[in-house]
Length: 288
Image (cartoon, rainbow, N blue to C red):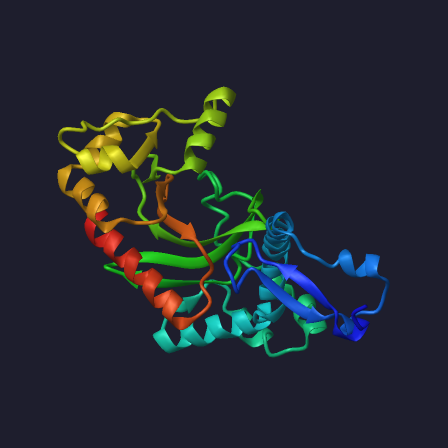
């Protein structure tokens, strides 16, 4: 009879190739009866189930770990203030810069912060941008003689796969009198929103551009507007060609006072702000 100390637990690999098809581990590393040792044999069908369980768990754990080790909101705010001062821009709520250096209890009691201006308050009539938070941390800059307000917005009325609000990086460009419209790239999410809007009777009619004249745009973009004639007049051939080649990832929308561009993500670092402002500058140069 074989000495128990020389027995092995065999872990079977699903690839069925020798010598990869099994891994022998000395049984003396495990305590228990022969039946218990046999339970340790891992069969191919178990691998797939364990892999799915692991991936499912990681889908929840990784975002939590990322948030745990990310910078605090105060540090993010300080980084934004430093960026605004370096570039010579202006904070929408100037008292923020002084308040950030005070202890948290005093900062929350600061009446100037409690009464701070919300940068998104005058664009909540644009789809996707209502019920947002974080927009008190905003700044203005001048691009091609246009006043532009830049900010992050976490929209709590929408939720992603992890159950938290959708973060957007937003630029609102002060341009009164534009026709009301929204446009962006085709996506599964937008298709679903269209269906819901049509059922509820809340969506604006879609504008269909001639596929022969605008093949790229007609294939990959959507436009919705309450006054299609006004929008097609605002978007002549050269502007449509710009939208086709620029391949913007976000959405362009308007209301009575602003043209707004927003895309998924959060502005945190200096490079983030510079890249986003550069895209907004290109939009202004080609659409306004």
